[in-house]
Length: 122
Image (tube, rainbow, N blue to C red; front, top):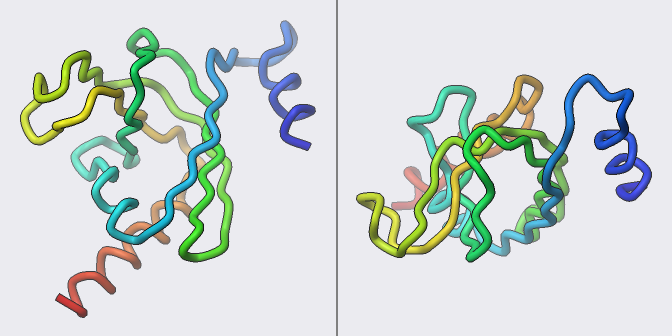
């Protein structure tokens, strides 16, 4: 299914082109919340990686939230680069930030619910 979807998203006839496909496993609530970028419009995630795409590149993310036993597929655009660990304040890993495209509302609700649960248990 993912291969078929990836091919459809990168076909010449698609209204947009996905330049990168990433499957990301997030094991814990803390790991999810530490990657969340609340200051990005529509929300976003920081992706630790040594291979940095260009800004504004479209990416397809398959997020496996292992602690909830759920998977969510979202598309987004690269809006932040951290080429060297520590070059962006607050980010100590090399990687990039992805802004979610419209349609990631279900994932945003999950992240917000997890933030609320983390606040309650703190």
